[in-house]
Image 1: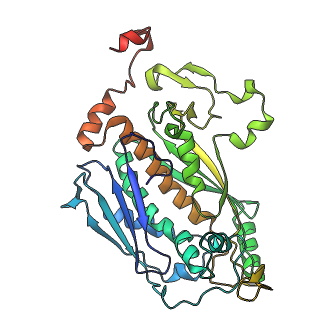
Image 2 (image 1 turned 30 degrees about the vertical axis):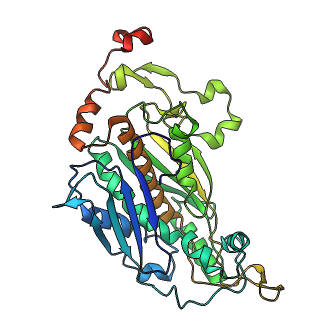
Image 3 (image 1 turned 180 degrees about the vertical axis):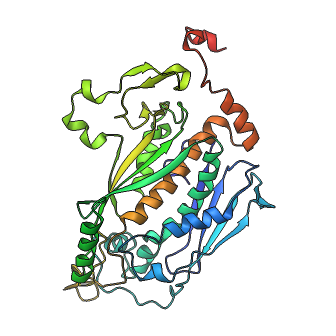
Length: 372
């Protein structure tokens, strides 16, 4: 189900299943409208992007992410019924992999052991693994195609790796190489943005309807993401209100002839999209699986030990940005379906035309009675 379910709200819902080293991942999406000719090659290309990036580990070299559609299509067109996707795992050693003896700081290992009161650490780590994001990335790539029908486009950019600006390629790649040689890892920061979103997506009647809350929670659900901000939220503490707020101005190209002279809010105000570009930033912590291991405790003997090592990446910021794009697509598609209905793409297009991009505010009713 979506990150923050909204009681009674129509729109998209999704679930994923599968373990990191199990047979496959499965993703199910309910509420996707009928009538979209789905480009599966584009979905596969989006999945492939998730494996790209400097500093990825061994699994990126052999995992194929083979995609199959199990339900929800007829002749390549969405039926409006539940859409079910399957992504095969090349590494299927779940039943034979040895258990970890010492939990790894920064992972779910010890927290899940507390919860379940077992030393079988794979119960937690297999599902909490970032491998699960492949399933949500596939769903997000499906949603990207729906958004494109309404000229809404999502992209991402890496801002830094290891504290080094991403534009300084040589410097951050050298830092990644050094971290690999040292058995260490690096984090970083990325931005996701969406252009073309109409105003009025989201809600304010309930906290769970708020678009900003849903977007922030969605990016925070990416493993290793430890901080998220919408717009210039990270700088807001040092700016006076007169500098932070976005002045409203006349703009012939804007919705209903209105626009903004800045966009510190990141395209969302009061829980609703405001017609501006939507953008968020996320901070990715360094991957906590280290070759040399962090100080830990062997649970069977309660003796100090180094955390058990499993293969890992050195830097995943580029991959996390790709996942962030997919999750932004998922949440915006859900908000769009809630606003326009989700029966068919054709009906959504008709309702989109009624949103009033070319309306004249002076023609709007003066009070609530005029909405009858």
